[in-house]
Amino acid sequence: MQFSVRVLSPDNLITTMQVDAQDETTARRQLEHRGLMVVEVWGGDSARVSRRVRGSGSGSFQLVLFSEALHALMAAGLSLTESLEALSERESAGATQEIVTRLLHSLREGRRFSDALAALPDSFPALYVGMMRAAEGTSDLPRALQRYLDYRRQLDSVRAKLVSAGIYPAILLVVGSAVSLFLMIYVVPRFASVYQGRGGDLPWMSKLMLAWGEFASAHALPLLAIAGLALGALVVSVPRAIRSGALATLLARLPGIGQRLRLYELSRLYLTLGVLLEGGIPLITALDTAASVASAQIRGGIESARTFINDGGALSEAFEAHGLATPISLRLLRVGERSGKLGQMLLQSAAFHDGEFSRWIERFSKAVEPLMMTVIGLIVGVIVILLYMPIFDLAGSF
Image (cartoon, rainbow, N blue to C red):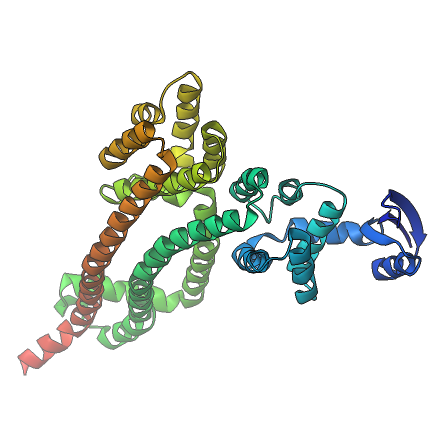
């Protein structure tokens, strides 16, 4: 199998050579034994490896863990190349090792770190690349890494509260639905067979339920198949709706909830812009980066605000004109523009609104949990009462 290999010679010249070898590892060893440093290998199976690295995403490559390890090594005094070499030695296999190897190859070719990151867009988002590119101008990569880690921790803390608040209601909904389906598909048909012949003596709601029981008993397999298909469709469609933003669009139309979700999106926008501006990135570039990671609900407003600012307007005026400012954030933005601390004021706005959103999540979960328990209890109770009403009537006749 033939491989194309880019190597660094002892006199620091980069050349491309053709090597016949059984696999990529053998091709590397052949050239390393000749005193050459292998920079990149392609051809053979390496194309499949490259596709796997590009498609690794966050599922196999953990950006936060990579950034934490890189920050710790660079803060200890190692250079960027030495830190990546240490990470490559630690990661013996998997997508992380492949990505680190590609980054090292790019650096040895003389490319900038931010350009090497930008070549792997599935693993390194535009926000991350922009922060590293700004830090290269000041030679302060450790601080930029720490700033990104702080940004992720703040985002993850709000998401964790949102997820934890939704776990108990989700469990209640699943268990309540399962109990209700069990009663309607298994218990009601058996009661229907017991009450056959007493149809004229039953309350009309009991008749309706028992008629359903007879139907479910006669068509049990088709009903189970329909229930299974509906559950499978739900499992497939919900993650897809979350990724596409359709679920967020639907929730945004709900009274009360939509307003809070927009506040959460604005808080993310303020946090992203604040981190970028504090990292030394120009405002227009920061807006472009923020628009690339923002949701569809506010992306249009960010692009319109960018055009407004490009024409000479202030950030506070642009955000106010396009619905991207709250009363608190607007005041803080104006203070930041006067004092020259716009990034700091944006971070303060994000912290304020995150706290407000967290308190609303706590209140909402405390109100929804007992409400859901009451609704599920009523549904189950009504089913049981309708099933036992004929027994009560029979007992009364005695």
